[in-house]
Length: 292
Image (cartoon, rainbow, N blue to C red; front, top):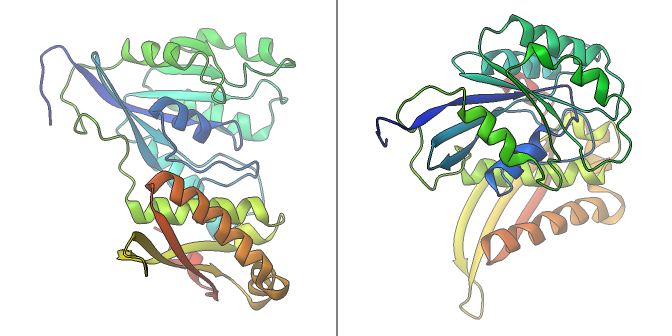
C-alpha cells in the first residue's frame, strides 16, 4: 500500500443494462484487455477490478454483469446478486447508458439501483462515435440527478479521460488499494478461461454459450522440440448436456478447433510466446450449481 496525504483513492462501480459497453469501457480505462467483449448479452459473469493509477491517486473500477430481463434461472439470479453485492463498500457509481437504444425495462432496473444508492453518481453516455444517437437528449435530461454527465466512446477512447477526471473530483483521500503498475485483480488462469469463453460466445449461436463455462486445469511453461519456450494450457469447456457438447465440438471437430485457434492466436500475441492449447468439451449438468 502507498500512503500520501493528498492522494485520492476509491472504488467506482460500473453499472448498466447488458451490452451498453461496460467491459469495453473498462478495457479503455485501464489501457489493456482485462474484460472479454462480445455482442451477446450476459457475456460478463463475474465482477473484477480494473485499476487506474494517476498522479492524483487511484481509481479501482469494478465491472459488473449487465442487468437484463429474461426468464429466471440460476445463472441470471447469480449475475444479478453479483451486481447488488458490487454496490457494497464502493465510493462512486458510474451509470453507463447506450443512447442509440430506447430506454427499456433493464434500464429502469438499473436506474432504480442507482437511485437507491447514497454515493455520488456519474452518468456516462457511451457510443459517442455513433452518428445516430436518438435517445441522447432523453438521457441528458436526467443529468441533474448525477454529479457529472460525460459523453464518451469506449470503442475509440474519446472522452475517457474526462470520466477519470470527474471521478477523482469525488473520491476520498486515502491509500492506494493496489501497487502502482498493477492493472487488475484477475489471475492469469481466470483471464485465460475468460478469453476462451469469449471465443466460444463469438463462434456459437444464441443458445449454446449460456449453457457453457470454461475450466482451466493447467498452465505450464515448457520447451518445444527446438528448445524454444511454449506455454502449455489445458482447459475444458463445460456444458450442461450431450446435445450442446456435440454442437460445441462440431462436425469433424471443426467448431472446437476454431474456438481453440482463435483463443491461441490471442494468447500468443498477449504472452509473446508460442502457445499449445489443449481444449476439450465435457458435460457437467451441475456447473451452474457451483457458481460463487
